[in-house]
Length: 465
Ligand SMILES: [Mn+2]
Image 1 (cartoon, helix red, strand yellow):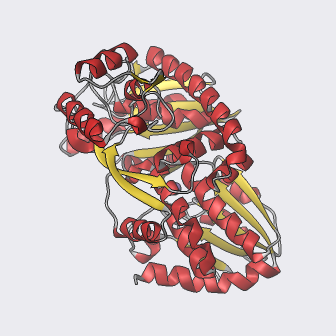
Image 2 (cartoon, rainbow, N blue to C red):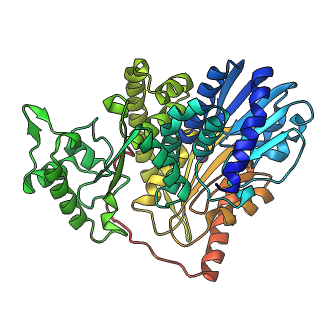
Image 3 (cartoon, protein in one colour):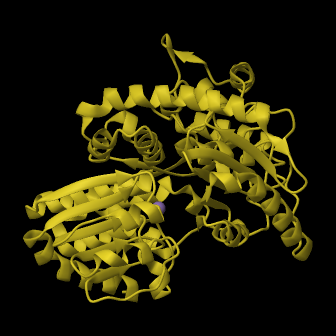
């Protein structure tokens, strides 16, 4: 067993009596990984009979962290905390602090600190939900029924979708052995159970289908050309209704259309289905998407119950999700009309026209469609004096390396990964920030070789799933 997992086990055994004896406050991030992690941890604490509270935050900023005021508690930070450790230091003398996170950590040791982060153990990076699952399992083996949630968080943090870590294989094998997950080969298109196929194809934003994504008419036409019926017995056909043979035909026709994409065959692959989930939640990626939407709309209770596959909250969750998608659609329109073409970057300065919780998603969408040849930077008001910044680029440039020093030199803070990062900067520095980062990216491109990505022109992106 690897060193990091051994350490998770040790810490879980040490925390168990503390979680029973002390009041526990769990802080977690509002995205699918954070919510999946919180759902695992909460169920574990319920079973332990702990006295606890869950607090989901859209971000653990330095300011929020330094203002936390507790004593004699077990304070738990899931999916954040590692990067804000210096701002949490004041809590360490009078509390026990547990952090389970996978973002770049600050280094600090203290007798009362239990810090579980793969970077500290040279372990491969997965999602917080994966490590939280192993923590819960080592604390009490009956928590293995939560294994599927490790995967939900993993697929929610979709920056990992293309990597194949051993830890993913391990957790996946457990899920299959425990009969929680069924793995099938199929089209990785969102809405297998929940949408008419023609709509699912038109909205297949994650796996782009040239000529189809973005147009329901083109999608209907395409299906008729390849002989897949639009309706069966008066009902619109869903992907779930196709025979294996039909799905294969559909897949090979789609791959033909995608021949100029980076990896045309990527649209066909493993589909992970949660066996005991109601139909709408069966596909792990769909559940992750729902959790993400619920978190962003601040329906945290519903999100956690949904993660536990509680079908009583299903209708409400679907209703919130459809409202959320409508909102996103209007934000996409705004972004497309207002994107500024700068020398080395695209900029969407949304101010209060796009909420801070959506700016990252909108920036991602633009960067994966018409605007993939340069980094896309989105900015939205966070509070009266702070701006949230998102940067996305899948080309050959480590965006966090460029973003972090600039944000920090302007009294801001930054975090994230090489192709997706975010920052908070003071509002008054915004103009200067845009100028500085445009120049810095130009300088960075000059040094390294820059890979030009294909640009899809004249394409109107459809909604993210
Ligand atoms: Mn995460």
